[in-house]
Every structure is written in C-alpha cells, then in structure tokens.
Image 1 (tube, one colour):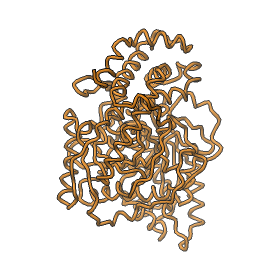
Image 2 (cartoon, rainbow over the protein chains, first blue to last red):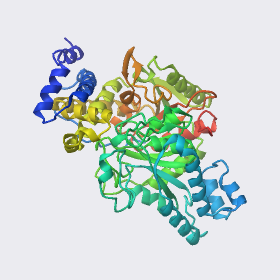
Image 3 (spheres, rainbow over the protein chains, first blue to last red):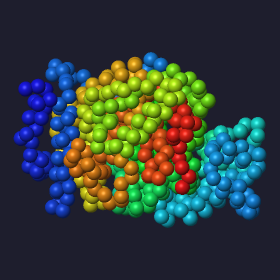
Image 4 (cartoon, each protein chain N blue to C red):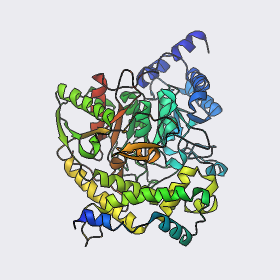
Length: 76
Length: 472
C-alpha cells in the first residue's frame, strides 16, 4: 500500500459522530442538540482535509515541522 | 460646501495622485472631501451595509487640522484621502468588534492600530470601521450580528469575506481605499467578488500591531483599492518594521509605486495548472487564460507549470486555521457559545476537538509545500491563478460544487487563495474586466518579498485594458 492509500485507510475507522461526542465530553464542551450536527459536519470537513494532508509524502523519521511560518528572502 | 466645490469633489474618482494634487492646489478643501464621503455613505450604504461605524467627529476634526496645517513645501502623499478599516483594526475610543457580538462589551481601544497611524501621518483620513465576517472566519461577507454585507454589483449577492465591508465600500466608491486582513484569502476573495484590487503581502511584511488576531501563523494585513496605482501608493505608505508584531520582519522598505512605468518584459510568468485549473470552474479558467494570452501578446515569456502539493497545502491551511483559531477562542466557546454566529461557532468547536497529530502533520505538509513553491519560483518570477472559483454567489447560498460534490460555500470560496497564504507568498488579486458578468479576480503570486513583481504585472494588465475596477 503506498503512502497515499495508507493515509486514507487510517481514517476508515474514524467515525465523526462518535468522535465528536467523545472528544466534546472529554474537553468539557456541552454541545447542545440544536448545534451538535453543525459541529459534526465541520469535523467531517476537517477529516476530509486530514485525509489529503496525510496522503502527502513525509519522512517518518523527521519531526521538522514549521510551527510558525517564516518566509525566506528570495534570490531576486 | 459650495455648489462648485461639491461638483468637483463628486467627480468620478481619478486616483490618489489626482486627488492630492487638487487638494494641494486648493481646488477643494479636505473638509469638503470628508463631507462628500459622508454624503455618499449616507446615500449608498443602506443597501450595501459596508460600514459598522462612521467616524463623523473624528474625521471632521482631522480634516480641519489638515486644511489649516498643510504645506506645499512638505506635501503629503495621501493628503485628504479618505479610507476605512475592517473592524478588527483598533480605532482609538472605539470597541474593536472583529465582527462579533462578544467583543461589543470590551473596552474601547486606547490608540489606533499602527497602519492607521501610518496612513494618517501621510495625510489620509479615517472615516469609518467596516463590516466583516465574525472573527474573520468567513469567505461570504454574511454576519448575523451586524447584517450581511452586500455586493455593490448586485445587492442580492455576497460581497465575499471576511474583509467584506472593505471591498464593498471601495467597489461602491464610498472610499477609494480600505484596509483588510487576509488569513486564508480574506482580502483576495472579496476583492475578486467585488471587482477591485487587493494585496496580501508576504507574511511578515506589514505589521499587524493593533489588530484583533485570528490565526497567528497565517494572519496578514493589507490594502484594497480601485486601481493598481492607488493600491501601490497606499502599500508604500504602509511598509516598515514594527517590533510589536513578533512576525514582522525587519527589512528595508521596497517601494512599488514606480513599477507603474516599468517596461521590463523579462519577467518569467508561470500559469498554474493542476489544482488551480479545475475544469469545474470554467469562468475562473477563462479569466486566467485571458491574462496568459494578453501577456504573451505583450511579449512576456509565459509557460504552464504546476504545484503538485497545492491541494495538500490548502488542506494543511484549513486544519491549521481551524485549530489555531479555535485555541484563540477556547474560553469564549466554553462560556458563551450562544453568542457566536452559529456557523462560526460550529467550525471553532470542531477545531477545538481535532487530534493534535492532524495539526502536526499539517505543519509538516506546509513545510513540504513551501519548499516545492520555492523551487518553482526559481524558474518563474510570478505565478498566475484564479482568485475565486466562481463569481459572487447569492446571499444565503450554502453549497457549491467541487469535484462533483456539493461542498460548503463558506469554507470553499478560498479554494485558490488558501494554498498561497498557507506559505506566506505575496499575492495581488486583480479584477478582470468583463462586459456583462459579475466581477472575478486573478491572483498574481510571487516569491517572498517580491511584491514588486506582482505590481509590475498588475500595472501591465491594467494598462492593456484587461484589468481594472469598473465604475458602478
């Protein structure tokens, strides 16, 4: 399985409804019934974004992230 | 105001340089300019809703001061130029709303944001604060607390956001220039939908001091204007380091206004394909191909190119924004969830819950994408891409089609802008003229700190008659 497929398959078991209810409770959010679905819909969108992000290649032994972006001067 | 002065002041806007010349030679007083602006706002803003406050007293005092103190020996480049600011900029003695109901009970700002000070030091006059999407988390211009900002071209349509009032006020001619902020496209999206010029400079170029934050590692501020010339003059006045913004980089001011007369055709131009040429957005693709054709005919070297990690980069920006923005509002989301715009609240709460590994991976991808873009920008001086996938949607429209799937409009109007701000590149949104259709913009993107290249192409397209803001 290539990295892209692996990225997708890791999300197959990610259930947005269950995750939202569990994480909201753990984080102390009292999500009311009238907007619970709105939050779940947004977790679903974030999941789709995460699938794309995890499909990009990465070095499994590198933790060099860019926590704050700092632009470099171009050679112009 | 006398009839003749009123007639002069109310002529169609001919640009900052013309305006300043007329004020300097006494054709009209700054006080008359200010009264003319107030009259326009009174007449037009009822149907557009671009302003959340009009600063009558402050602007009149400032105008009187400028009329008394102006000196021909030391001319000010923005003398008597009225402007507005998105209401996330601090304005002395005003509450910084940031489009929210929650901030309304905050104490008033004790001083102006630095960029307001810089413009007023050059002779400009702040006339009001402008509507925006709540906490800048919006591409539509809709706001449940202060009313939707409407597109001056068709008030049943979105102005775009989140700098909705900034773009709409400029497009309607209520002010010639305005300031906005752009985290994922919030200057370029409304500039595109309202048919004006908007600049998101390099991340770290303009200080954000005195503005309400959204997502620190992605927040930019910048100007919007009716012409490339006005945008350049204002941008030049805004530049300069400020240590109060940790992201601001100490660099020399790099002026761009003189790029209007540049005749150099050696710029290497790349037309972005792949992600940026999605066949589901034919009008956006047509705007880009019109630009490419005009530049080829004008003698520029134009080639097709690709950023293969653009979609991943856009997704990374989405997750980073969601998580960082939610972290900023964590306490308020717990204590006052009902006081948020429901659409904003639901997005922020979702962002509060996301796994940390998604955020870390998004940052890795951001770095990967930045490296890819840096490599491509060794072969090209500017890259061309659409600003928005579609023209202004109807207010209230919830979904649009991408890759044959119905997706949320609020999240996806920034489809083309989001990858670019993710990696901090300067991007100028240029309105492409079309006879009968609503406006649509094209982005000119360059390497970090190369805003001048964006302006060179902007000026060229404007002089070729392909780009420009139509008078409504």
